[in-house]
Image (cartoon, rainbow, N blue to C red; front, side, top):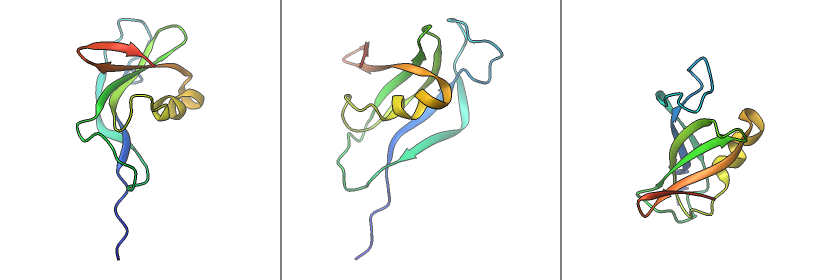
Length: 100
């Protein structure tokens, strides 16, 4: 019996880190190589994913991507809090952005 391949829990697709300033109007830049964070393949996930955005406590946008599974998933925020100082996770659902 073979082990299933790990599936990405979330994928970071865009970042403002390539820009030289963190202003509220800093554009998101598509990453040449998306950042994939893997998880256990046995856990079910939403195949289409949910868009998310990560902000710091000054409301500066750092990352955008797609998370899989529940929108109560804090994994992207946990990943970005220590290394990048992100403190807020917003997700896009039912046609609008909401804060987790």
